[in-house]
Length: 296
Image (tube, rainbow, N blue to C red; front, side):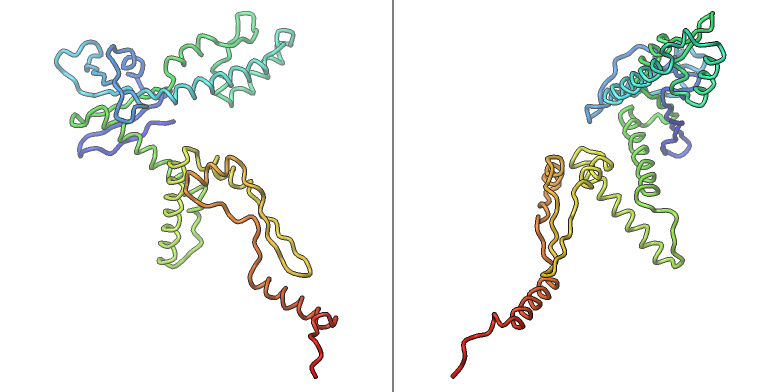
């Protein structure tokens, strides 16, 4: 994740850096002592760090504020991703001690386009391939952490962290609108149709956020679960019946959280039912079975 700018007061700037883009003050700011306090949401811990212009001590002067943010849930995800990458890399280099030097060089060359795997690989003095445990240990200290750098002295560390999270939410919303919801390209020429297209995409994004907030699932997970509900149409000579598949526990949980009723299992189209009824009555009249008693 590259650095992002958070809009603040005029004349001030706030930048956020991930653990790989912390800048020259990245490790210095994160090594400063001091307790981290959780914001109101309880999931994110923040700590303000003061770095003097000369880099050591404050001397009563402070030009830039740093706020270290730590998300325990993101730390667990980072650790799991790193464990999966190392396990995959171990499979790739399994038995490489018996390979020729040329074959080992080819493997290293293929990993140059995969920095996620390459940074955990090291070569010994004899050219053998090994897992770089020291690099993994260094990254473990930065799991779930990012650094905010700002010149705004009016915002509290909690407000800076909240503003940065809101910025990420806005960027995530634009990505969803341009990818999942098909905001672009716009195949319209009239301004009113373009505005209508954008407003429909915005309403769809609002529904996605409501689903994610209510069900605690991502939109991709909820959509994948609901896509498993199928509708089968049975067409016969006497009419057409639509029957859906049985509701899974995951689908029932999503519908319950959204307070939505389950769709009907069986459905007969009214127009088709009427046509089917008229067709059956016509066949009965032709067969003579519907003929009433003879009148005197």
